Length: 300
Ligand SMILES: [Zn+2]
Image (cartoon, rainbow, N blue to C red):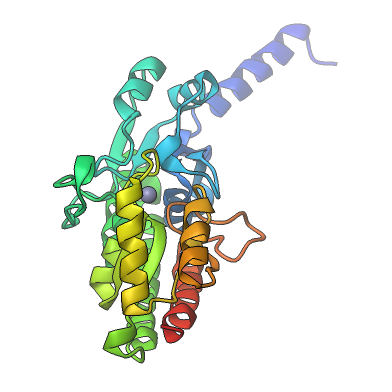
């Protein structure tokens, strides 16, 4: 039987070795603003990063209000990834109340923004929905990988390799979408959605998106604006009407009724689906939307 002091000594030595293990043995704690960023961080971070999204799947980021629990969650994080381009209007308030002292990464840094068209409060404001162009997500992924490597240099090589694979996947996705939509005749390339979330997709693939609401979902369109849209849909014979997985579908459903069109399946605009839905990852989301849009535009 060893003297009691030596057992203490063993415990102290063990504790010493446990404490001196590199901090990176525990996953890097990242918080992201919305579900699309969560997927991109997972693709690059793998098991080395534990990521939580403030705004969940199928949820409307435009109407988000952070809770005290979420401020506490952020206080413990090392990295916060946001979209930028005005998407997270609550950001400064949240980082202040969480006293967040980690790294903040704006995923859209370096993307060429589209300026919102439309009248009223949207005019001239940058459109935040840059993720709808896969070539922009190549930029997002690069910014995220750089931030992860900066905080956790021990796994920099793993992040670099996953980034390379993911960017190649996005490149292939872009080419696939371009090929699929290339078959749609020019005069059929018109789509109606609930809110104006697809300008980047439209610019990338040559489709005109018209929306009942502006780049946000918090303001009701005027009756005059809706009547104008209904006239245009009738005049141009547009049948490709879509609700979205976020926001209120009623306006588009009413417009569909007024114009005799049938809305297609919900498009995924500002949030992924839940894991068992049709758009649980960014790549699956773009593929799903593309199939739905292609079938919708064929009816035009
Ligand atoms: Zn939106």
